[in-house]
Length: 463
Image (cartoon, rainbow, N blue to C red; front, side):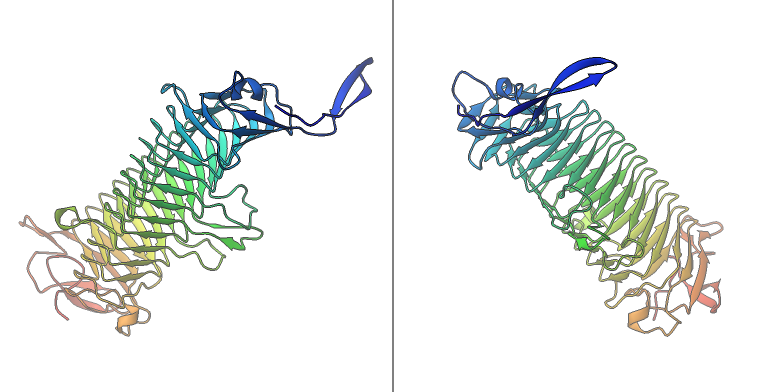
């Protein structure tokens, strides 16, 4: 092992009346360690000083521990070194120190997790391949923090990245002032690409998240996330996430969690585009006052009985869905169910296999600005069932043109500028409609007047 000389200058200071000699480090060191010898990475790391860089060579078989007292060091695999953690009960690399950089490893594999940051540790994890671990590729827990950039995280038994237990992470960038992204490729993991759970938080920008077995991004158990946004100063840089071809939903927000979802492409996910469920909340829209940032939510959902929606909001959840393109999803563009409330404004809702907007089971939709359909949805443009309501603006001035109304092949009808529809169970019927369940029933829609509505809900099934 070769080292640069360290130059130390000693100075005399007075603390509480007593003279104390303190060293000031004038030059950091660069050290090298070739794996396979008698010394381990853990043993060398424990003796590093702030500012030091440790260059790793060869194939290392070790579960590395970077303890609490180590700070401000770089562990560099130089693009070729590998680490395989032989103990499946420990992470391959555990970080408990502060401001530790793990970079340029050709492979980090084995172990319970690839890289674990916990007990208040902080790390930058950059430009590594992290794969084939027994749990998560990266696990950040117990009050830890990590910036995770430029990695390929793949083929791990559980999630690609897990943020848990009151921890936080920046995924795809280092700091919110960055004007250059550091996208990760998070793919083919056995659970979600990214899981944020147990009162944790994450900012997720610019990543490709694909082919994961339980969905793209999962936010659960009182956690929160910003998924796609504009960074830099002041909000000049945008790097949307591409969330595609996951076996679950593209994004799941559930169990009293919340998310801000901006500027992403969410496509071809089997269980739908965005699911907001179990008392969760979401803003699915551009950032206020910042140009750009619309989400494209397209071609999501399985086939037949497994068909799913572009956006699903259910079980006492709420969402604001504004200025997105929601198209070609195999069931409804937006489905609102089981005592949920949603604001839906300014979206283009096209060519979905069910209804454009479907509201059911004591739920409601408020439409503050007109949505548009340029290619009809297969079902109704807007449909309400079972004690639900729709209120607000359906068209821009009621011209009834294809560009300014919600339309469907089963009910292409303009309501004028505004509407208020409440759907109640028909007397003596087992099915649900606005008043009774016979076609030709009328309801008063403000300010248009009396309009024919069929037993399926808000829109009559004739042109």
